[in-house]
Length: 138
Image 1: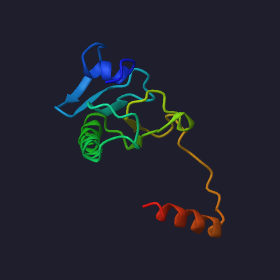
Image 2: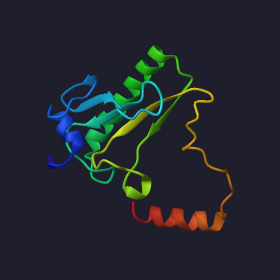
Image 3: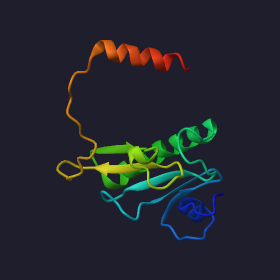
Image 4: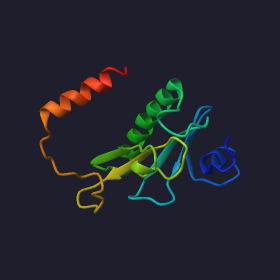
């Protein structure tokens, strides 16, 4: 556990959190800077900074838990939608270097539009070239 990791300190009980679910591998707690009511974070207990470092088994457990908790959010809050947000690196707005998934309940006109983008068709030749580069690294 990196000594400076805020989420590792929450897992260790050194920093309080409003826990919603916990088992031996994951922790789910309320975001203290919520975008909307019911905004939760799902984290692996084992430290991994991002998607590039997380153990594949831990990733599966986190996402399975995210689905389970999202269903509970929907039943409890009756929200008509949800954003599942996961960022990696400063360029993607990751602030805490511990893999985490945001479960953000959504309602019409809730004023959270950060996920919106303008749909502009790309250059199909360049799209194919990029796909080929990625495939070459799989």
